[in-house]
Length: 154
Length: 191
Image 1: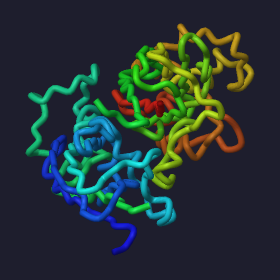
Image 2 (image 1 turned 180 degrees about the vertical axis):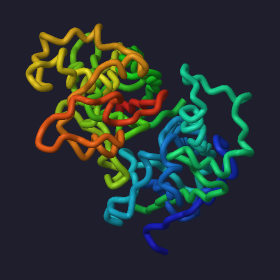
Image 3 (image 1 turned 60 degrees about the vertical axis):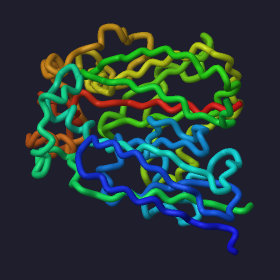
């Protein structure tokens, strides 16, 4: 068996502001969770998106953790792309419970011209988001998020 | 209950108007004893230049109020593990009082105002009354700002600049900003 494995969790985000809860089990045979990398198909979807997860019921990243901190562009060398956790996290057959939230309500805040910045769901018609051309931060739906988890025996 | 040896504590701020200063105070998480690093995430890159961020921990200044916000942010071209400013000496904390103040960049437009800055945009700190610089986006258009960047001027407003000199005709800030936008402060804590 290899010493490293990159396990993937794929989520489909269908609407602006959507929150997706997911569960996964770390592959057997690997002792620790070394790092994480979140891959998004649209740069515009990065701003405001959050990802939190717990491993064996212990919080690793809180729900407000920005995906921005867990991703990198193609200009980053492959060996530096993952966020490597500052401590060794025991992962043997660990269960993961996570929550991904799309950040697109953020540009809505801006575009709907609310002076106060208070997001009023009643005023936003999510169905009309396709063709949201005036918004420079517009995100197209659906899109897939791939969460890459780096498991290791180090 | 078991907890990790590290934590990213977050503070979210909403900037609703040009030149706004937003103050916050928070308590550091009780289970962590060192503040090792910080980063900012700002909704608009255009909002960064001139924006400032100050930080105090237990009344001790860590970053002064004029610390530029763009020194604390990062792009997607930065490896995830390098997206924090790590302090040379971690700051000891123990349920500490953390205070911060973020000032929106639109103050930059005011600094370039002739009446405010006869020296051409560079003004001594003592001459700036920060309290006076709070203006709403609407009020800001009353100022006619000088700008040295003709390309930016032409692109931003459609005006033709006067070649070789300053053009005093400005009715909007150089960078068009959308309000509100969010600033997220991440504090890297360890035990």
